[in-house]
Length: 306
Ligand code: NAP
Ligand code: GLV
Image (cartoon, rainbow, N blue to C red; front, side, top):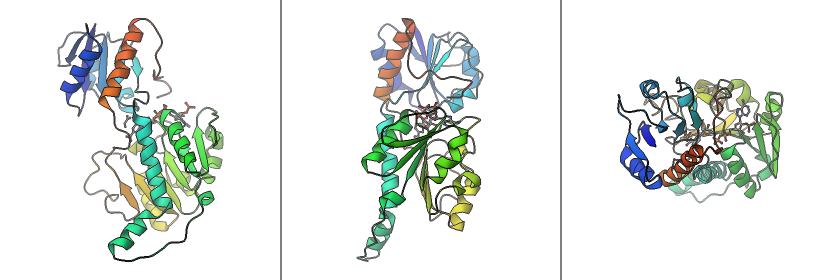
């Protein structure tokens, strides 16, 4: 069996060593133009040339949860596209989102500024019931985040395409229930995949539906958000702030208005990182399962887009 590795912005050696150790007997090599046909590929944002030269691939294993970059390409006809299925990401995402929600709710930025200025001051405690959090996307990551937020006793709402039941979470589903979901929430967390249906979904119309003093946490993809609509709603005062981990262009261009906006907190696409050892173990297990003709979790539906 031949495994090829073609991942942008990723040091190949540790992955190649890890895959060789996990799949003894397989040939594992980094892809180069003109390389021999492989059975399976481990990929992140590969060039179209790679896919064109590997028409016989049976599996394309994406080393992330989101497959939007991969699905933009013309894929080998028989290849199953398989996304990372948690592999240590959901706990990171829960940490990141709970941290952002709690920092906002408890006004820790304000306390940090006060302490920095030598001011010993108290703020009136805010009421948790006034800070309903809505999670867009109740998949692998969204459900973990929603459950983590419940531990802190925030009212939690969730929105997905198909109806869900998650203990302690008010679940809404489908386009018909989207506006009701938004108006029930003060804090909005985006954990949707980027698809034609969800591109630009965070815009003036939708963000205006959040309760006054709304707060946005975007940890999915930059193209979900209409940047200028967010800035306008922050400047008009309808939204109190935003924490953004993902951007339309990454790295975020130096001249972008998000950098210096006083109500925006930025991180460099780091909310849930791919963990190499966990990912290799998961991918190797799935390659072996596919070779045995068994089903695997995390197979993407290219028509649905996730
Ligand atoms: P997932 O398991 O595929 O879950 C996606 C969820 O979104 C599902 O609940 C799905 O509904 C819902 N959904 C999809 N299209 C929808 C629509 N049109 N309307 C309403 N709901 C819709 O994905 P995941 O593993 O949780 O990951 C979510 C996204 O997070 C990824 O696609 C990626 O873009 C992003 N991500 C970011 C980072 C980071 O570091 N910033 C790290 C990992 C992932 P159904 O359940 O009904 O299908
Ligand atoms: C990261 O953004 C991922 O999709 O895993």
